[in-house]
Image (tube, rainbow, N blue to C red; front, side, top):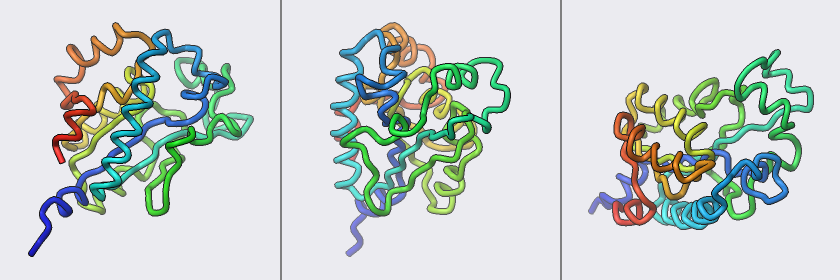
Length: 203
C-alpha cells in the first residue's frame, strides 16, 4: 500500500534563509539591526519547530545563505543597496557566515551558498534546478529578514510558478510594523502567509 503522506512530503521543501550567526547571534554584525528582539526570539523558536517537523515528514530541507571572501569581489563596486551595505558591514565573512547552532544542515540536506549578493535565494543559484529536477513545486520559506531576502525569494518563487508559503512567525522583520505590512499588504499577491501552527497541521 502506498504511503500517500510520504509521497506528498517528498514533493515539498522547507527553505531556510540566512540562519547564520551574522543574523541570529547577539555578536553578529547584522543582529543589532533588529528593533523587535522578541520577534527574533519567537522566530528562532518557531523555526526549530518547523525544521523538526519537516525532517520528521521527510520533506526536502534546503539551507540558503551567503559566504563571501574578504575582498567581496563578487559584489563588484557595490555602489548601492544591500551590495553596498554588506561590504560596509563586513557581512557573511568567516564564522559570521557559519550556520547558527540548531540550524546546521544534516546529511542529505541541500545547501545553497553560491548566490552573488542578491536578495532572492533563486538568483544565481542552483535552487530552481534542484527543485524542478526533484519535481518539487510546494515550497515553504522562512528566515531573515522577512522584508528583504524572504520577501524577494517569495516574489521570485511566485514568478517561477511555485506554490509558495511563507511561515511568517518563523521569520523576523526588523520591526513589528514591517511584519504586519508583509502579512496584510505584500504576501497575498505572491504566497500564503501561514503560522508555524498552520504548517504543523498541514502535514
